[in-house]
Amino acid sequence: MSIILFILAFLGLTGYLFVTGFHDAPNAAAVPVRTRALTPRIALLVGACLNFLGVLAGTAILTSHHSQWVKVPLNNVGLAILLTAFFAQIVWGLITFWLRMPSSSTHALFGGLIGAVWAANESNIATVNPLTESFKSFILVPFLVLPALVFFLSWATVFPLSRLTSKAYPRAVHKVSRHAMSISNSAISLIHGIQVGQRALLFFLLMCLCADISLTPLWVIVAILFFALTLAAGTLVGGWRIGHTFAHKMVQIDPFRGAVAQGTTAIALFLSQAFLHTPVSSSHFASASVLGAGINQRFSSVRLPIALKVILTWVATVPAAFCIASLFFLLLSPALK
Image (tube, rainbow, N blue to C red; front, side, top):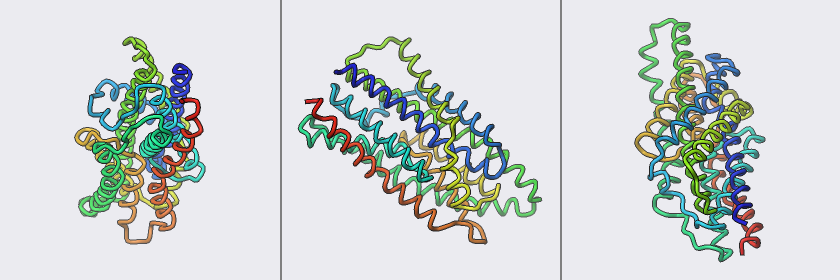
């Protein structure tokens, strides 16, 4: 039973990485493509390569603080919880892709973990507390505080930079802005790969502990390379349905403000990774920064109904993943008793 659950959980982890790749690709590529800083093919190719390198770099610097928020029983129940969380993230990712809405793969995964643990407790299969203090901080700070801060920073940064460029030729400003977006596209993709790679390796090691599988360094390296290739492959697919929503339909944005938005996203992701050690949503950051920079214009550039739908999708992500995971785990629970 353990081997079967391990194989299913590994397939779930693979699906999670692939869906995350194409679901989050527009976070880095949509604005540069929208403002013609990069072609779609180049943007996705660069994003895939940097995500690949990010996974390799992220797994090399994985430290103990990344495991603070993950607590599952080290047995078949733990494997079932992880499998259920991956399933919930994949289902919600496909639903939001069909709806053309950007959403957080990170928070869908967290919601799936909470739902699976709740169902395990309700089924009297295990007693696990998912709402530890560290888990609360990993949910509330990235979900509520940081996107609002990114929105404000993107909005506020337009003022000083617009004054600095007020006497420059628009063509020169747009040229520099497009170069800046090309660099930001690479930075966002690299940091995204680092975070996803750390998460994937952590879950893989947990799965091995749950299944009582001993790993050699060679197999760990093979697994890391597989994770990197899977995320890169997903990125190459590119979810343009989602990118079209926040880079075309939600906001009309010029190259200058696009560069501000991309730069704010890249800096916020870097600071979160380097100092807060908090898994954050690149989807939330990208959408919030585009909205902040786009709304700071003299003409009406933001389509409020679309922006409200995006925010509503953010709010619905955790409870939706919770419901999907809890229902799936309850269906799976008879096989665990």
